[in-house]
Amino acid sequence: MSAKFYTLLTEIGAAKLASAAALGVPLKITHMAVGDGGGVLPTPSAQQTALVAERRRAALNMLYIDPQNNSQIIAEQVIPETEGGWWIREVGLFDETGALIAVGNCPESYKPQLTEGSGRTQTVRMVLITSSTDNITMKIDPAVVLATRKYVDDKALELKVYVDDLMAKHLAAPDPHSQYAQKDSPTLTGIPKVPTPAAGNSTKQIANTEFVASSIAAMVGSAPAALDTLNELAAALGNDPNFATTMINALAGKQPLDNTLTNLSGKDIAGLLTYLGLGETAKQAAGAVQKTGDEMNGKLTLPQTSSFGVNTNNTLGGSSIAIGDNDTGLKGNGDGNLAFMANNVLAGYFNENELQHSKKMLTKNFQALVDNNWPEGAGGFSGQLSSEAPFSVPMVHRQNNDNNFFPLLKGKVSLESGYPVAASFGILTSGNTNFPQIAIHAKNRL
Image (cartoon, rainbow, N blue to C red):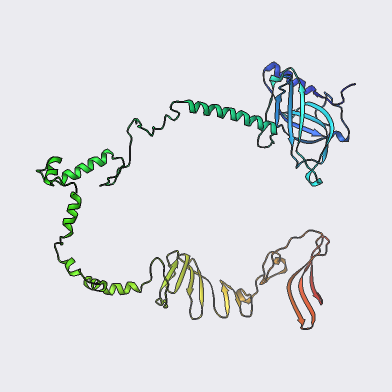
């Protein structure tokens, strides 16, 4: 009985494999494709240059020589569970130029999609029998393919063996960290440096040559000329092992050359401040606002011409606040008027009757006006699509079949007992490809 399922080299694949063997240049197989054969199980042909009905092509996950048969090459590809919705009846291998190297058929297998209610990750394996396995290599991009479990396990084992070997050699070495000094009796080379201790330091900190030299110089420099040696100095001090304590106790009973301490002795805080002439200063400091932050229980009044800046200097002049920019902020502009300043130019103002920006203003009567009492956008019909208006809605773009009403003005009134009415003025799209219509609409119930 002849084989129903098999794989063979295409004529292109056979020629490329022969060329690779003759020239010693490896044939790089990079991709595998699967197809549904157009709905029927196809018969592989050496003349094929493509699958009958290709469904998916992607980079190989693995290409290796069969450990049980060194004349067989096994190619593998993992299809993730997110792809599918078709049958797999044919398989093809492609090189880096996109040429079909080998083609085969396989038992029919349906690859479902997750959206169909079932999904699985499927591995497709293709076996080639060739006598030139040394001339076939795999070239993949690891960023775009999935690793099989076997591939990961093999690599993990390979890495573990490598790391274990390195660690064994490291532990066996007599001095594995030759760049570091030993903690126990280290032998240092070069010119080791340590921080210089502060003057008078008597701890177990290492004393470098700078500390020793400065200590000796301080001691020698303060000694009388007659005391040239440490022995002479010790003899002059009576060889007192507690010399520092003795000196402190002796100095405790001494008075300064002037009578300041005598005058201050026994006085309370108020008396001390009076003696030092700081009484008024202390009173002012007690009621002062602290620089680090404080609360005021009185009012703060600034001079009429005062000005200040928030996070900036102020160049706007009196009665102004500059915010972020030294010539931009708020400024008094006469009785009842507060001006908006931008780059030291009057940009607008507001008072109890109106809000004005440049030459446009909004009053209590809501009149939007520009020069010559014309409303914004006044002019000929030809310019209306490109101009604005006192109350303007930007251009709205809709589909050709849109059928909607876009209100521009609307009013709603209802009696206490009901009977609501909404009246609108706006633009209507009819659902046909033509100009939208101007519409006045009224609706008398919800």
